Image 1: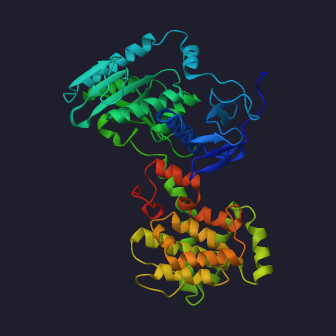
Image 2: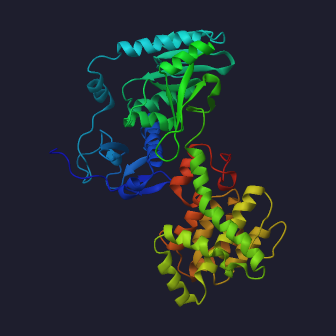
Image 3: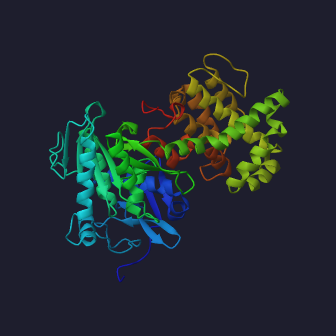
Length: 468
């Protein structure tokens, strides 16, 4: 402990994520920080010279260590082993993966139970006539990479494809998990991690595997073995996360039930990104419903409708400083802050919906047809009401499928004039934070990057051909 100094306070992630404080990390849902942990390790394996996250002080690469406590696992930023001990935030020595693996296995790389499970799984897979080739713990020569792998069980299953089954009785290490996923993805082999029992609590290594498999845990136990014999094909027991820290009732699945079109992941049901997509829309849906009701209640002045009251209350409870801003806004501008926020919401919705549908949809001015969105933006930025939001609006537009609008001379001129004539709000301002809460796919770098990693960034929020 003599080398221990303190924890890393801020990690600078590659954009769009940006800076993440240790407080932010520890406040994240488990699924979110586990995704970050996996992405750091994937980058480390694919290109160690360009870390996904760096220490703010020394700029060396960092990773996320999972620290076991009586209340569960706690994430912490830690320097990689080659990090400088001179960094004021250096937290002490960390074991290199090879040393940690040697300490865990104590020289015994395979147990009798592990071997038995691998052999049994191979035999049951071979009962299926579609299995044209199989092997246990046999070197798999690579098609691309210089170094191959020794999968626990290797299967070639006709049109279903090639599978590498890794049977894990002890916790796997995060760097090895990432390395295997990258390798097999490049080789066109589907990687499936299989446990024998579902421990409670699960070691972090098992959580890392489940993160890569989108919230799916696969077991091969007595029930799976009996079902395999009965059906004449390999059957696994699958546990799906319930989104509340627990599990749904297990189901018996075969290789036919796996979704394998998502690169490094093989899973039955995506329990991670589906929930992230839904949570990203939740607050925005509340405001959209309020806006639709307001248009019916007060068609001539919908933004001053009481329909927004409950939506405002919900947003205010999750955005620090929004209540104080409301009082300040009234004092300085003599207008209702709720109405101002509703108008800003309508401006951004006009951009988002137009980007999504490919047609011009404007909800705050009477402009219609081609060029309506650009005309609306120019109109609102030329008035005094939204000049202070020019940076926000510019950032929003540039992160959507309508990013080209930000390069139009008229809008660039309006943005510049607004920036020169009025102080701009930044991403720490309550209004910017409120819009981030409503449009996380664009304004929340962590959410945006995670959705992009998972192939679920909506097309309206993507300014490249990555949209899906």
